[in-house]
Image (tube, rainbow, N blue to C red; front, side, top):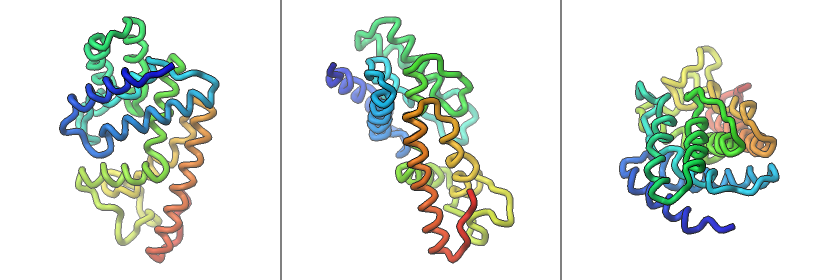
Length: 218
């Protein structure tokens, strides 16, 4: 089954809705989430669906800064905003509802449990973006936009202080990112997540060497 026409329509819709989209949630991010979702679905023995495609491209239709008071509602707002777009693209009501659920359930902070295979796959596909080399780049991009320094120059790996990812970008590795693999819902997704987490551990070891510091036990 080819999804090319629908994919291009979704990319166009996302581009038209996101002129001020940040570097971590841009069109390239949506492209990668779709690639992740396809890989996970295939690994789980499931053919990718139109529902999964639509959810992958519209999951960040509404983006809010990490420090925005309504940040936890961004996925719900994206799910709601996706309806008119998918209706205009000719999707059936049941496909629109299934896509909206997957979008609402993908968020780390939204509190909606995935109830369908597409929802579980999308959540894993999006969380993969927080890990590995791309996860490192996105972490520092988001932190820079919030005006947070890369790390504490005096104690970069929080050896003698509490970790605080609201103050230092690197601390986010310890607070959240390196804990993500255990939250994955699919066998394929978790395997991919563990490989990417290993990349981040290698980065931390290299950074520690450059800084003349012991590697953290994160």
